[in-house]
Length: 407
Image (cartoon, rainbow, N blue to C red):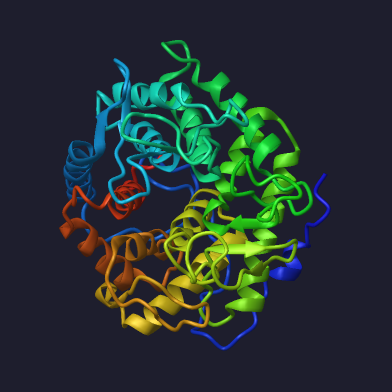
């Protein structure tokens, strides 16, 4: 049972003297918009839908060529991750499944891609909870570093299965819905902190272990949690959703009132940013290669649910990045302290691409969104850069209006 869940309304007012953030919440579009448009009043790039679709399809085709490889058994496929610790990771398979299900209306062979990756996922269960996936696999598809799970991969896998059921039904080779419900139960059982309600790092960070109280902010996907509740009828997911939204507001209010940036990792029920190296680098408490995904994750929740907390969070990050770049995405670096100090000036689409999703929530951000789309449209896939290019493809699906809406 979750013992910590602060009231959301008390956490909406973010103190500080940062750039002005547009007030209010996203308004529902009435009557319900057609497929390809979002259910809330959001901005979109000024480029034509046809041009955006053309660029999306070109990038998607190049991404498949660069990163989709055969698995180690016939009929399976895997997303290749040359810039990760191992060439096949659960995170990448989750991304690949979400991409395939999202592209179903535009790619008649998307289901083949989905089923190939799903076959690979199902062949490699975590040794701790077999309804989750082993996080890291070597070139021979053998599990490495313990063979346990990573929460981000399973969250995307579960949500992608729900998207697949929506796109194709569950009467074929795989019962997508049944597989989704089973994985959702495992996520709750093995990767949710019972005290804070926040996501654990994996099924290995059990109570009493050193990192049990640590959570990765890029795993905070309120949109997914709402979908998990709808799919299972389990009211615990409503509490989990509230816990994460309250944590987002609390972190911005207490630790980044000017910038709205979230840290890669947090600790405790509060929660608080970690200090120094906890899991990956000395910048684990900064806005780095994990938290760079939060403008995309939180922005997507705002676009599809109109939630006040994630809308405010996305707009705060948008306003700050606009203020420090002058609406020039080329000035975005690859790492920031929560205060806003940049510690890595190198450009990386893992950092600038996700900002296009949060930009869509801000009615004042049209010039910024257009500049981001121009950069997205001009980018080319780099076969050695799985992480940034895979994030960029998912952003392009959303920004171009091709992401599946909730039922």
